[in-house]
Length: 267
Image 1 (cartoon, rainbow, N blue to C red):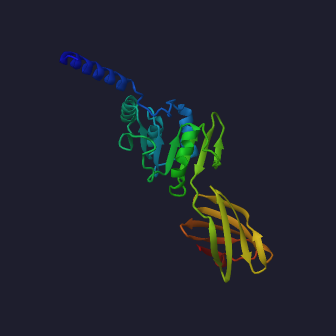
Image 2: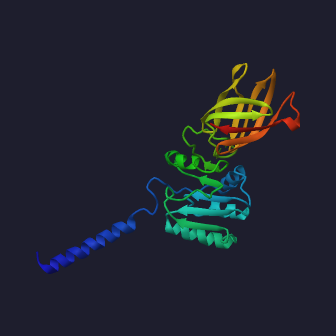
Image 3: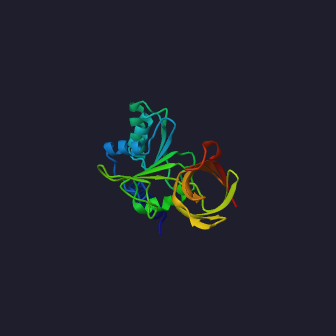
């Protein structure tokens, strides 16, 4: 092949590669941009109780309407998006709204974004993407709120569903409480075995008189509640979880307020 033909072939190849590259989608192929209606944005943030102390991360932020609305509540917010045109539009809108000091946007794949500092995560992603994100979300600090427009998160049952004009789901990341706990309540000592599936918990308690099932066990973030029959009376234990420790108060018939404190440690 003649040198000039080689040069022409190289130029044509380079031009074709450039054309194909410019035509490549700016978004992930599994993320379809569909803006969330403004009224739904308001409902999402209200359901998550977003306020001035929050840091909101919106995964797949599009034109930035969710982070901007969060910024208007006084919260800090980060929008994560791959489409340069949408990022430019979002930054311009944040500037016009006067929230650019609290709201920022980043070009990044949503599966690579660090979520550790978020107190609220907002989503409008397909169900399979929500499920792929679920392990990372469940590893976040207990109490982190996750709100999704329209799509659930597999078998993780939401804490709240808002159906008042387009479905919105809210999850609260639960503490890890599964295992055996030694509880001290006044001069009493007993063992509780807890089972856990997301925020749904159940268990048994071993007492001197035998074993019984916990009653009305409930977990939300770091807050835990359950009831035990002690000495023929039902006592409701309410407390908070901090790693391998719990503490709180037991109330119910037969217990004075000063004698109600309880502590627990995981074995």
